[in-house]
Image 1 (cartoon, rainbow, N blue to C red):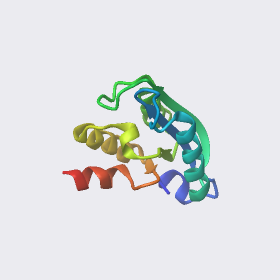
Image 2: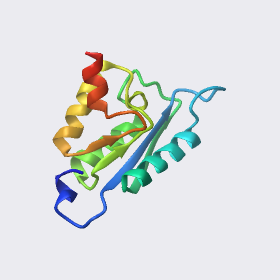
Image 3: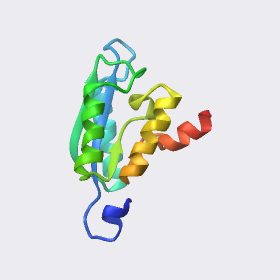
Amino acid sequence: MNQRTENSNQQPRAVMYCRVARLEPGSVAIEQQRQACEDIARSQGLKLVGNYEDVGQSGATIARPGLLALLTRITADQDVDWVVAVDGARLTRKLGDGATLAAVFRQAGVGLATTRRDLEAEVLESA
C-alpha cells in the first residue's frame, strides 16, 4: 500500500493496463488480460478505477497511447495507488524502459501488482 492510503480507511485505488502486439492464436488476448487483472485486484483488495489498453502496439517502445495516458494519470492526477498488469512485459520489453517506468512509479508512490512479481524485481533480476 502506498503513502496515500496506508494511513486511511480508503480502499487502495488501481488502474489496469493491458497490451497485445497483435491478435493471433496463442497470444494473451486482451479479454484474458482484463480478467487476470480483475482477479489480481480482487485478491489484493484493490478498487479498479480505470482501464488502459494498447492493442496492436509493440512492447519495444513506451510511446503508446494507452501507456502514456496511464503515466499522465499517475504523475499528474495522482489519484491511483497501484497499476495492475498481467506481467511487466505488458508494460515494456526493454530493460532501460523498465527501469524508467519503475522510477516513475516509485516517484509517484504507485505500486505495480502482477501475477508474477513487481516491475522493479524484474528489472533488477535482469540487470
